[in-house]
Image (tube, rainbow, N blue to C red; front, top):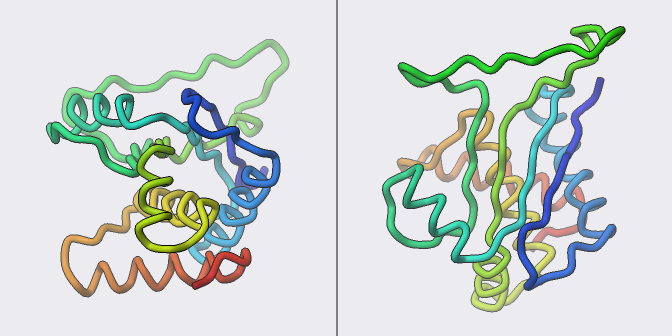
Length: 165
């Protein structure tokens, strides 16, 4: 097994290129290595502002669009249903990927933010992806110390894949 990226495109604002996906796979590999996470799968979905607004409202109770959402599979809530994976005939449990969680990126927000910050759209999407991945691992930015730690980790990964400041 290895750390793998599975992705979906549910928006029409940006063509998702093989180059972008390759860069995100590299970022995932580097972020995983730095955190000691070498196996598993991350699901990434590209959406627009309307779609992420709906998800943000329904799952977080925040009635506005955001740039990225992360839903970790290793978190459990009281009353949450257990996920059951049915094996195909001949399939072994060790071949089933450990899904770390879902990352949803608003391409609409990424475009606006890349213009606002004066850097490339690829850098912004890379930043949002690594940010979302760190959230899947339990990192947060509720206070200055945790925000600084998370920002440092994000910048280190982005620099390794050629998207540094």
